[in-house]
Length: 397
Image (tube, rainbow, N blue to C red; front, top):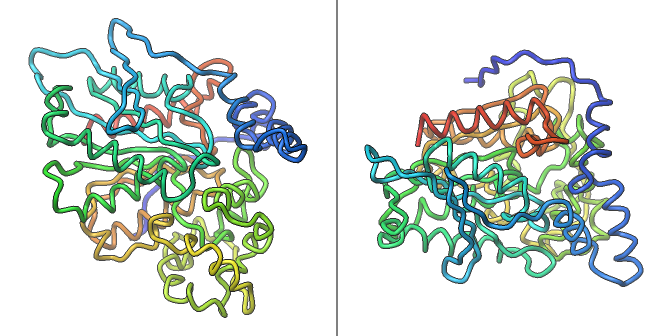
């Protein structure tokens, strides 16, 4: 059954997307990426450290408490977290909760910058919930799988009965969520927790916002359609993957044309069927695009970076037996996003495994839009995606 997409496309010219590069310097690839790459080339600092410094300069926010939401910086089992607590209600002594994982290519951003602070504050207030925003360690300080280890460790700590009790959280109403690379980490965490018999509290749901879910095919229709679209061009996304794995940047161009999963790469053969977009995507998305499958490629890539084929990095390729145990799922996707098809394919695979899935697609949206709701980046589509996401959480958590 193909997902239904009730929204009508809104005229949203290419020039609107290009404007983003001028008014959102912290997250676009020009000019901050150019500046950080120059600093990296000169040997002054790693380009991702420089880029993150620029991002922090534009919006680090200290913990504060409003009349509605209490905000606290602490740590869970050695992992820094920012906790947002909605005001208690006498009729609801126990709150629901969301563990949130921010995006940024496993290398950028923070739970403490204004974009994510404002998002989590809004969630805590509107849901009357406890939101735990994880400040996991980033590339280049650590690489795969340390980011996963951080979010798993912090979430396991939070799910302990005595910790849930401390924050007045209902153990039966805890969900996980994240955007972009944070959506990747949330999906991986969900798969691991669904198989962990030692956990007394099970996750009620997962909500993935334009998640990145696979590194095998960089020529899905959405990658082809949005190859140079801000904020996340294909080249930048592939570089994030290579940095995440501490791999050789010389492989980037070969990976862009799928030389790492060519027909002669035996390690990838068994996994291709799990992300065969010709069968997993509705025709409204496949359009006239054709698969890019190289006959001869570069087997050296996956031998030097085997993490590319690891389910802990690419949860889209998980076994059906793993998927069928996942909780109720929400996936938000954007038309102007290289990652659009990752989310849609995951929704299809989950649905086929018997999981209840809500696929929320926005035809006028771009990658990262949900955190841009305040001036000067108060895009209407950011406000609408955030409202749709929080409404779903309110109805299902």
